[in-house]
Image (cartoon, rainbow, N blue to C red; front, side):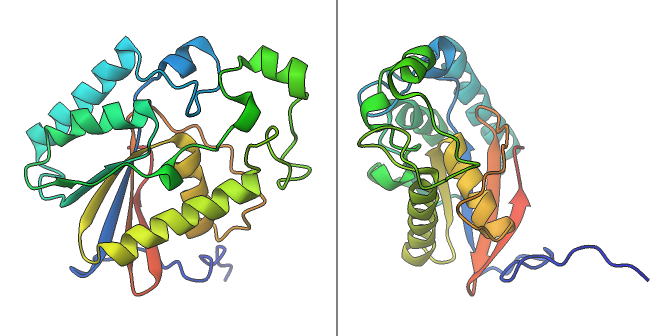
Length: 222
């Protein structure tokens, strides 16, 4: 008899989730102006959600209100970038019991350094780009992060949320890169130097349940 690959160490096939689990609900922000116009939206470049992005976040909040899926969430947090904070503004209207805590820089998308505000073409002309499939430790630009640094930061940030809010549901308005890093580490077991190439949709939901040092993937890109 042949068997499929075993889950990575620390990951088990999901069954009934214990009541003591911490649920980490990662919501990718709605479409941003940076996505629409094709430039790096770091701390300087992010100008918030586009009209479509606001509509996407509104529709997700309405869906949650209608279905009651996350009405019991206790904590709401976002990254410090405007597109994530604005997405959290919309979600707050659908969460009856939630306490909103201060935005966190460690939940941001990869820090672009000197690439911030540049269009993709300007970035290629100025810095030539990076190939993280060849070397994931190369910074994206001077003053910016490498893929390896970024994934290590994200794993630490999400682990701290579980430690701070045990047995609670934590909604996180964040970014596609953060979701990919979480999938890479908690589902596929790393290493942090590889990439998955995920296409995570705007305002999609990825949920983990974590307890006793084990992370379960509940849903991805839902």
